[in-house]
Length: 65
Length: 65
Image (cartoon, rainbow over all chains, first blue to last red; front, top):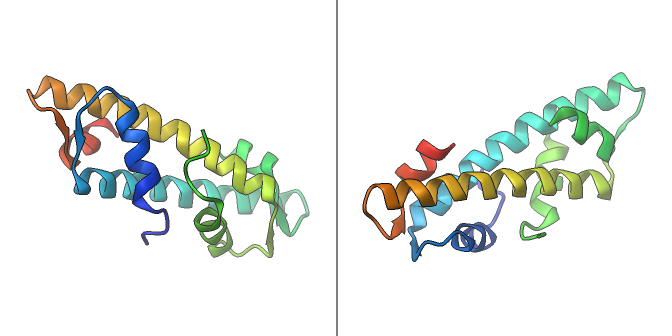
C-alpha cells in the first residue's frame, strides 16, 4: 500500500524520548497505521451508505473508529 | 499535531466504494491515526529501552501494536 510518507511518522516516533529510529521501524508503523486506516475507512463507507449518503463525513469516521 | 498529510488518507478513503469524502472526514481520520501513532510510539520507545537499546526497531513497533 505505502500511501503515508515516512517523514511525519519518524517525527512522531522521535517525540518519545528515544535517540534513534530505524527506517524499518518507521515503515512498520506505517503498515500498522494503514491497516487501521483501511478498517476505519471501510466501516465509515458502510455507515455513510447506511445513513443514505454518498459522501463520507467526519461523523462516519468517528462512529467507525 | 497534524503531521500526516491528508492526500494519502483521502486516497485510502476513496478505495472503499463511496463517491465522495468530505475534507473534515479526512482530517478526522488523520486525528485518529495520529493518536494511535503516538500510543504505539510511546510503547515502542519503552520497549526499546527495556531491551537495552537507544534505537526503536521494527520489532518494538510490532510488540507495541
